Image (cartoon, rainbow, N blue to C red; front, side, top):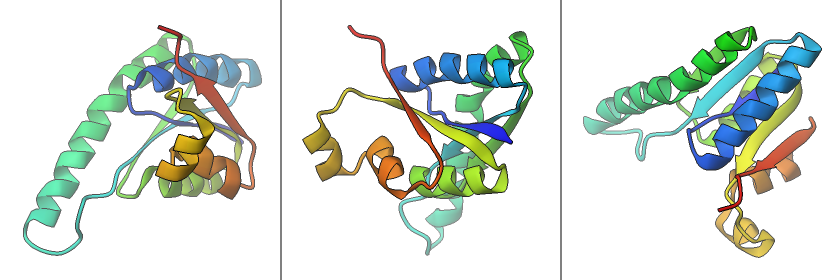
Length: 139
């Protein structure tokens, strides 16, 4: 089993990282750090450039998280996926037999999250695994 964390360096994700490191350490399970982003298009010359840029941004984003997990003695697996965040998290959770999917929240209202399609809102409705939503620190 594992703990799967959606990580993008946002304030909510940073707080979720701390929660995930603590949980993975207590359960002695690996922390799977997932960065999912799909390029805006899949055809044309620029699609390859977009994919490479997203992979680079994703690798940079999770490097901080890997360093923090390493410092806490928690094993990590990095997944930088060419997929929208929800699809990437659900896929990684299945492949790594996640005990829980952890995501940070941005403090959106439930109505705004439902209307705009926030990652946490979608995961709560689509995942067959438990989802832990960690709010960003207040102000």
